[in-house]
Length: 166
Image (cartoon, rainbow, N blue to C red):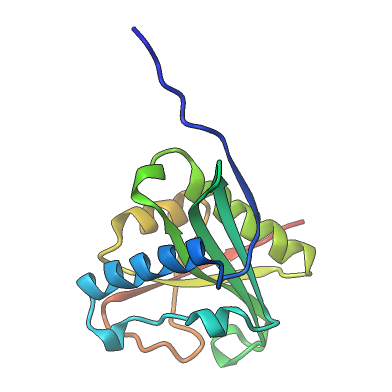
């Protein structure tokens, strides 16, 4: 029996306007548009991802971007009792690279970036129809919480939090 090995992947900072990243984000937008009404999608544009408070990472397999994700540093608000936090945004893994650990590695790398900049709390919003994403976040230690950052509690969104320890 012959086994084929997936090439290893690496994760590094990347500009969200890199053509391969942009293509992955377009695919993510199309996927989300197929699941939810536009008002229920809380998407940061490529321009918003270029903001100084955002750190963006891409997973590369050879010369191809196979995943991406970002964290956005946020000031505290009433929903966090004034505690600042990082918000996980724009997580996506190309279908051909799923099941290889890319998403878990990306999430861990984003958490490492957050810790390095002093972040102690990570929050995220995802949709209830995104079962794979929900499993990923729960396996990584994220726990359900109330809405935050002005997100509507629309019955479709799930809100998660994780304490980041050094």
